[in-house]
Image (cartoon, rainbow over all chains, first blue to last red; front, side, top):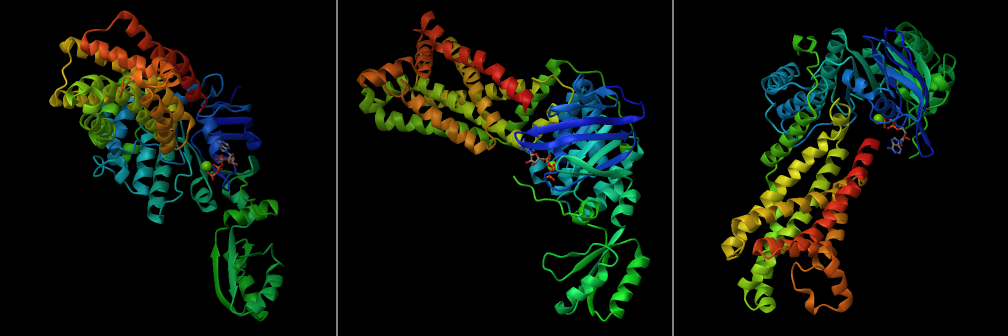
Length: 318
Length: 264
Ligand SMILES: Nc1ncnc2c1ncn2[C@@H]1O[C@H](COP(=O)(O)OP(=O)(O)OP(=O)(O)O)[C@@H](O)[C@H]1O
Ligand SMILES: [Mg+2]
């Protein structure tokens, strides 16, 4: 398949099933070179399956794809030469030290002796792991493991880096440090395709976002375009008196679809900006509803889905 | 985090298949350094077997513990190597469950290199475990009649057996997701195969139907060959029948292993 020279990744109708489950059911993507592109979707949406296919780990059932101009099916070895993948679960040798992991991979790429050791030293330093380099990986914290895992993908600067849920399970500090890393890599010209379950993460990092669900792409655009559809934020309101929930819900519903929290005490409604949130809150209080608590947040993945499809994402039926 | 990230690092010249394979061999060596306990798993059972069988049953089975040990030691070496293979299947299953092989498979390397590394690790384990058991045997009074040459040939034979049986557990390791299940399954297969053999006792006293099985059991054939090599009484026929199973397993299962690996 021919591909415009400015695209790093291009797929058409890519599909993959596992028995009756259509994990990826015909996805078209065009990712320009040098961009951070996010694939946003809930559990079981097909994110990992999509990335594994693009990383040559899983053969597609149908459709076509090319990565940095190399056809995925015709020349997987050429694709392997220009990509790196950091999977959803750390792909490190837990028994070896961090340094040994990096030296091993450097040698596999073709750095010999001294050069492999230097490469490992550079990467450990760049990823704040110099002190831990001689410890076995099974003593690392989640954040350190993630950093080492990403370092292991950068032995040779890849054309395209795939990151499958790079911050899931990390605490806020570790997440910030991974985000910083991703931005620096992108600044150095690496194209990054990452998956995430958090709109906030996609919003923070990615120039374009594709929302997928049940193996299909249901929306794609810049963060701004998506927000135009979903509202840029969500106002959460908790009335003091549960008896006023109905009245509050009816009032809020005049601006957009209202969701109740699982416990039923908090109402959430999409809003365009802080000013409209302020107005809405003022009107709510003026209508006599007593507000115990309110906050403004990014829409959650559920809310994005709600806004895009009018239905929450379906639970995975596994 | 610094400019080191911003520096583009180009890909060096593509390394040879042999160089790739040697990296995996090095990984196997590192595993010994970091997880020396694995040797404990490998040699404790055979050591217990050797001591118990020699001293508890030896006198009753062969007149004296000493003459039983002379009979038993080559057999326990076979058992050690065959059991050993289970652990490499577990190792493979662990690597897969941790996603480590995904990383290897997304690299532009010789696709069989990870297996050659596993094999190197296996062969080293066989040699080390075999050496320890033989050492203990020598201390207890075992004497290989055929001398050093006999022992060297016997160990070469052991490696061939370990290599052949290794495929069974590599296949299991790739098909079964949890390492402990690989172990349970492995021993479920191996206990009957090693006990219903001539490792511990001469099958002469067994009922006919069982003896029929024991005599063609590959483990028996291998044990006979090993005894022959260590005692200096081996015949070409003995060695040939002993090698049937390892060769057959390799020929049949190596392609299956590769197919599973590529499809994974
Ligand atoms: N090897 C497999 N065998 C069978 N079914 C699979 C396999 N891999 C994925 N699936 C199924 O395909 C669907 C998509 O899975 P996938 O792992 O791609 O989702 P995901 O978006 O990465 O989810 P998560 O956020 O949980 O990581 C799921 O229904 C999953 O159960
Ligand atoms: Mg996933």
